[in-house]
Length: 374
Ligand SMILES: [Zn+2]
Image 1 (cartoon, rainbow, N blue to C red):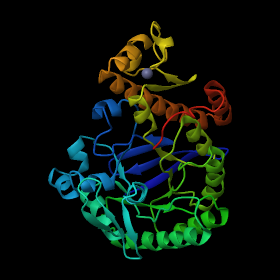
Image 2: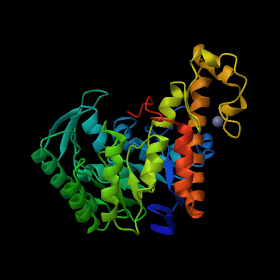
Image 3: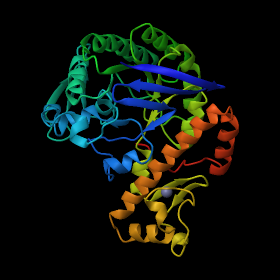
Image 4: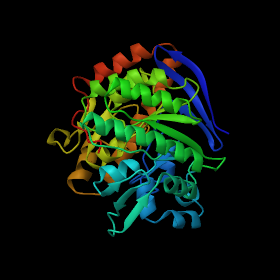
């Protein structure tokens, strides 16, 4: 029911389609993040208009609110939020570990306290799959043991070995035929560990492979290097997903190293904070320089924000009007969606390197370094 079709390559960049029962996902592609069953501030039609084929939901957050059983009773995640296309859910691992709610990790489970009511919850690989099956996502992720870096090598190795064992337990527990399961390659910035993890997971039957544990504060160049030495060890006939990444530059640099799918809160989170992504770099709309500017953010952008002047958009943020965050979230997701469409066209035309260099030149030095990802 799930199949990755490689249409063509240009250097390390891949142009493909990930076929799912709910429709095709064109790659390279960007998945807007719908943490709690909503891409913050936007209607589902507005999200679709940005060119997204697949959106993301967060298992950890939906497990706590409204609860996976409630989502199932409301007809599943698709029916509940009104999205007909494919949905990917993460395993909850990243949130459990990153929100600092972790109580303890044993071979059996990660135990954490809910950030809502303090309830003690045991997240086993089997329970993560159970939640994702109840949500009814099209792609589920394995539960992995995430640790903060830098960490002693023995800790990194221990978490890595556990993640591989947990991936196998998730594979055994997943029995929905209409739900794909993606494995997650960990290993920090260490070349040997990444290759070892990728090789071991590639030998197991997963429908796709993710690169995890990046975009957690390391310099961008370290991220690109790590992706570059990991992807050659992943199966060429399966989609590759770089989790939680990133800036527009991060997307192009990692596509050049063989990544197909991305997700990140950057477009929406920065949109809510008055920062717009454009071909000329970031525009901070609160700055007084935009007060009398009658131009749209981008001349050729079909989004809802670009029907208006920069001066009006600035006014909305200065006045605290809720329309400001809505319009800028739409613009930023449209920017990411169009960037992916342009990238797919460039790869098909054998012009990816030229395209990438032109975008980087437009964005300027240290593009989008002031943006927020977490
Ligand atoms: Zn726009």
